[in-house]
Image 1: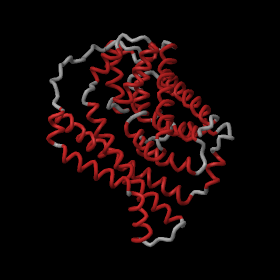
Image 2: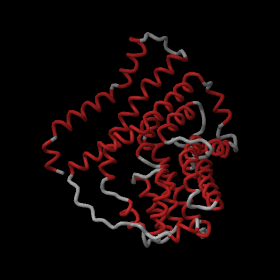
Image 3: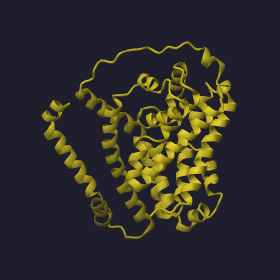
Image 4: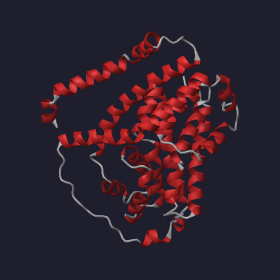
Length: 343
């Protein structure tokens, strides 16, 4: 690693300087485009909509590229087999914590739900611990963290990270305590383990760099359209939705705001890239933090595609309990955040 960095110091330095310069002066660049190039009148709905869109799109992509690249290098040290080994033999609560933390740094999403579930069950990992992993992986990942930092800052990002961990740990622990293995499809436990034990050759650091670049191409290639759409919707709401409309409907003063946000969010499907720019505008328009984050968690953590996929390995009773338990955890988070004052 050290030799690689020495040989490529100049290239790395130039790229980092360019990145930080563009990011630092992004506000001035945006204002120049809106005020001097387009010569739009300040304060108008269209002007502020375009200003929001032109500023947020490059900012989000700059953050994504840098963080996904770094996380891609980190992920090269992980594999499904290593993840299963790390969780084997752990007690319920300890296993829930470890599974949730591993879910935040491992490259799995709802599309991986069935093979991961099967692999974990075959390795003898309790289903409660497995669910902690499956909840944390899509809900808390580098895309969510990058977007939250860019739009809200570190404070809200840390709040979301730790409350998301709480939901994953609490939900998995409760499912484990309830002993719901009988609601897993019968064929899952009968399936013979097909885990192939293979020792990975030592990967050189330059190859890990390439994996980071590949990660950027693959992830950004898959989610860029969601980012554009999400920011476009957010920009429209930023410029045109009256501030008192959403703040009145989803204010923390209304006890039903958190349950309503979850009920509305569960049927929807989006990933972090699509929903977080919308959440940013909801908070800007007066929606309380707890309600907004509860809505986000329900959209990401209880997505319909994942529920449909899990139907292949779980019976409806367990799916209903899974949705109910996760929703309960999100409700607790929403109510607690709504009634805590952050200074």
